[in-house]
Image (cartoon, rainbow, N blue to C red):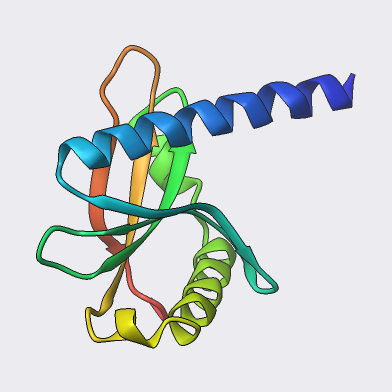
Amino acid sequence: MADARRLVAEKRGRRSETWAALFLRLKFYRILGRRVRNHAGEIDLIARAPFGPICFIEVKARSDHASAVDSVGLRQRARIARAAELYIAGRPELSARGMRFDIVTVSPRALPRHIRDAWRPGD
């Protein structure tokens, strides 16, 4: 039973990330990576903002926007920040652009919501 729930959650997560990536592309973001993993953790989406920084994006699918934003806790933010630092360290050509941490929330029967600069490491 637990395995079935995990598979459903995994499928919902992948679908939400696809919607988020499409939504960002419509806003002229260039997707650089999906589900990027390193030994510090996983980053759902990495995108280059138009004329802006490299964005490390956490995608959350919840029944409403507020609960999706609240579900990104301090430990998760710290893990994403460490993974982002490792990603940038391996790509020095991107470091000059700067970096930003965003959240995209995906809820049923609603367009995705993009929260730019949702947090900063150390907040």
